[in-house]
Length: 282
Ligand code: AMP
Image (cartoon, rainbow, N blue to C red; front, side, top):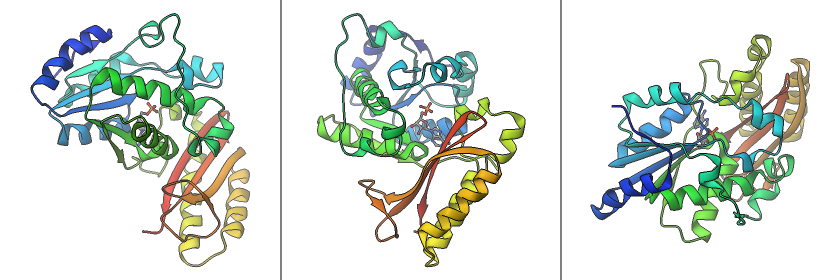
């Protein structure tokens, strides 16, 4: 099924009004395009429980803290639409910058606490950009359900908090990270890796698994972390922004796994910043 590409909010509202009136369950899958199987797993999850599915594609300038990253971000709208053909998608919403941020736009949604660690520190303004655009997409789509990947776990928790705090009547579903066969978490940014860097990239997940298994077996997190960092540096990872163990709910820093715990990492490989996270135990 070829879903219509909708570029204006009035056109989108024209569609959703009827769906809302008919009591349909509307799912929204926000993306920045360059779709891969990770994104498509969210669409599949939406299709399963919703009667209408809207996929949004918007490379949101407000969540980029680096203009080069924004300029280099892959844009593949035609292929994206083609990849969605095998799903029951009712609309692909592709607003342009003016549609989302018309002249005079003056509002920022800011979530405190959860955004003061990890990517909140290394990407100033990033989560304000995310929370603002996602709040808009929730309002624009009239969705009852939204689908986000655990790949961006901190983002998932920020979006959940934002929807709860602003009383937005939407259920936020977190979906598992989809990986390449060698373990590398799928990401649109993987397209930017050179062939050589792509060979080393799965080491990040490998080392994270080693730490997680070590912690579960009673090992010392700090020692396991030091060994992993050494191996990553030996494989040309130039900078590790963070490699931390945190509580799965409020992202509090932990040095032992006492409650549902995740391991989070962000690391640079040949000019590309990779992020990943996994559960520690259970
Ligand atoms: P992005 O286009 O990178 O902003 O991602 C759009 C949505 O897809 C977000 O909810 C991401 O967490 C999710 N996503 C990205 N990569 C993956 C993946 N490998 N597995 C599952 N979900 C993903």
